[in-house]
Length: 298
Image 1 (tube, rainbow, N blue to C red):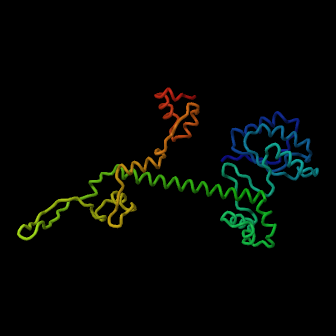
Image 2: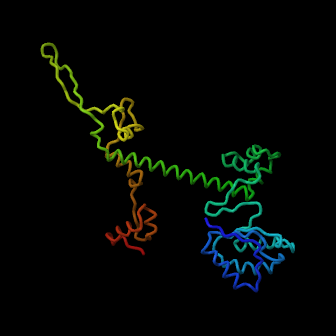
């Protein structure tokens, strides 16, 4: 992420054109603008209106704090409200997250413990006590509703969700590789021909015969690639059981969701159809070109 940072901007109405030209460049150069105080000279609402007339030309998120000059006339609350109404993310003891960047542990160690206890499933009262606070009744619920607490808690939950999605994606990839190996493996190389001698018949009619049959090689004799196909596969208690090739392909299809019917309405847009499948735009257009009845969207 690219950040542009300035402070003490003290924007003047007479410099409007020059300021608009200078600040508009941020739209191409950065992903967010940080203004570290002193939007105005003397902290008056009129000065802030002139400042906001310039900042409205900035289309990336703006994060800022008031400076000492902004407090000079005692109108800091009104100025803060004007900034927030204009879409500026004004910080006052809390954090602001942009594209997953911006959430840090709370400065108050006990409040961070309180948030983490909530994140792990504790109710507000228990989390309050675990953090070392006293008189949890009423206070715990109020603290849970604080914007900074909620922002930190929501960030942790999103991180967990993203980690879970990544874990699932890795597991699906591993399973896909294993099933593909099973489906395409040369299974004859897993077996060897052995001779088995047995007696058939009884009494005078008994005779010894030698039979040839295939049996699976000992695991120790398999190559690492062959052993990977067998180890970890469901067992019937006596010998490893490998899915048939057809079974492996069926599991791959189920993994890709191809076992579920997909019906396209003629009213669906190209984007809707893309969201219903994993196809790329080029693949889908190629299919639609061969199926005019399905319609084609731009």
